[in-house]
Length: 199
Image (cartoon, rainbow, N blue to C red; front, side, top):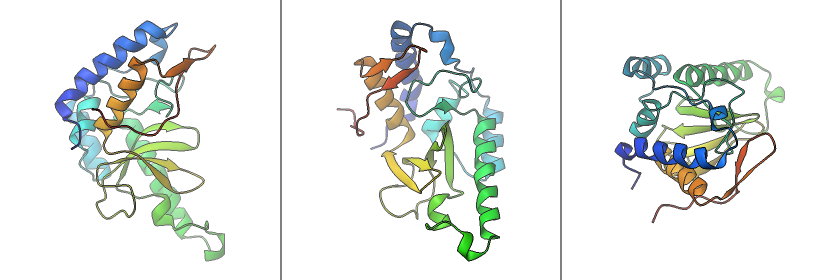
């Protein structure tokens, strides 16, 4: 069962408490203030997707991170605001539309529909990757409805966690048990390990 969305605010308290103890300068995380309910609804209207309740709950605590210089704490780059989610979603939709207009021999070797799906909601970005929530129940393979996937811009995607809430809980648990390395720039790199559900 996916994690109860009502637990999301508690997860954020755990994450912030743990990071404040281990990072040289926790303020570099630059977590944004809460998004308003109107802003969240406007995002849903703009991209035509109803967000999962756990992601909505997270945005009501922190509307992503405030700028591109924010320190990553989850290995998956900067958390996006509602504006960043919409901008990234439209960017990939435009790329797909432009690719479809190209001659067939110039298209990538993989199917465009497998590279990007307009029912994916991006919530974190890092260089050539994005974390997204899959809101398309027809996607094949391991990316179940509501699951977190890693969108690889040079390839297709891979499954990460059963839901956004489960992913956030996984981040919290790894930080709490010190499964990370803090580098000289103050970035916290979580140890690479496959998703493990909470006991």
